[in-house]
Image 1 (tube, rainbow, N blue to C red):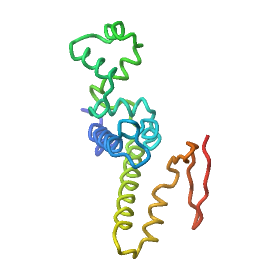
Image 2: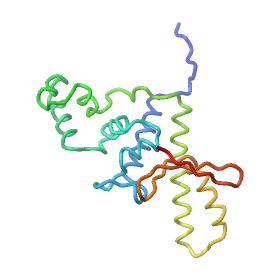
Image 3: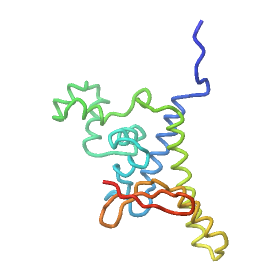
Length: 186
């Protein structure tokens, strides 16, 4: 008889799918000023937002088909032709780790954190996106009632978010009571 699951409600495939959808959505629909030369969100900033490494974010985007470069297309085409990782290494002069990083996840997203951390990341992303949409709608409308509360809820949603100044310096802020404290990051 099999041992009962500790978390029967936990479905790693479903959680991985939700994570990939959220990362892809953020990549394809970046806030103004965060896009790269292709019009997508910069991988480094996307990684910071989801508290992941840029390599993991890139691999998630490759898995969903949202991220494509000349080298990723070449590696994937060779893999689909039936070439082994070692053969692709020889043909592309990439290391084994680099070849693996350009291949999509085949089974599941590896090294996923516990559901609570992933759920927090997804919830933060969705909340921030929703608050930005609400404030944009309010600014576009002529009715300005409730704008102060909306602005405060947006500020609290972006607490500890990794911002950058016009000069590229990183910072975030924290809220304690009714005060905002700015912190520069190195």
